[in-house]
Amino acid sequence: MKLSILMPVYNEEERIADALKQALAVDYPCEIELVVVDDGSRDGTGEVLGRADDARLRVITHQRNAGKGAAIKTAVDSAEGDYMVILDADLEYDPQDIPKLLDPVLDGRATVVYGNRTFGSHSAYSFWYVMGNKGVTMAANVLFNSYIGDLETCFKLMPVALYRSLDVRSRGFGMEAEVTGKLLRRRIRPYEVPISYRARGREEGKKITWKDGVEAIWILGRERARRRSTAPAPR
Image 1: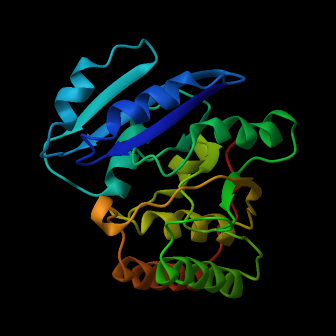
Image 2: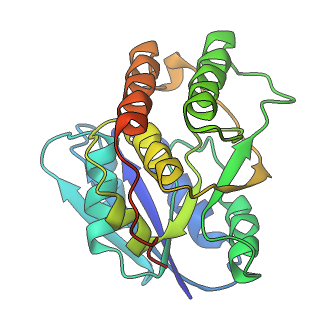
C-alpha cells in the first residue's frame, strides 16, 4: 500500500520547514508520498518549499489562493497513492499519529479512519472553538443518526478512489463537513482513533471562524436532504 499525505499550505513561512521535516521523519509502515499544494501564499512559503529536497516530496503551486478544499482537490487529483490523509502545515497535528490511523486499515478493520481530538488536557483551546466543533459534530450525528466524535478533524484517512468519488465541491473549510456528510449519506461510518492536538490561536494565524461553522451545518443539511447513493464505495 502507498499512502499519499496531502498538505495544503497558505502563508506558513514560519512553520512549513518544520511541518515538512516532521512529516518526513515518521517511521511509516508503508510507502508514502508527500504532496504539498502552496495555495497562493504571499509570504516566503514558496521559497522555503523551493529549498526542500526529498524524493518523496512533490510541490504544486496555485497562483491565487483558492481555499483549503480547492488545494485538497488539486492534491488528490495528482495523488499516486492507494490511500490518502490530509495533514495541515500549521503544526497543530502530530504526523507521528498517522501510523495509528493506518493500523485499522492494514488490519482489515476499517476503510475510513478519522483522528479524534478529545480536547482533553490543553493550554490553548478557545471555549467557542471547542463548542463550535462539538456543535457541528452533533449536527452531523443528529442528521445522519451516527455517533462520530470529531467531524472537523484534519486527519481523515481513506482510499484515494473513494475521496475522488465523493466529488467534493466546497473550496474552503466547508470541505470537512461535505466529506463527512457524503460518507454518512453512503452509510460509511468512520472508524475513529484518538490523536494528539495542539491548537494555535488567532494571533498565531488560526484561519477558521464562526462563519465556517455555520456553513458546515448548512452543508450537512444539504447533504442529508439529497438521495442516498446506492453505488458501492470504491476501495
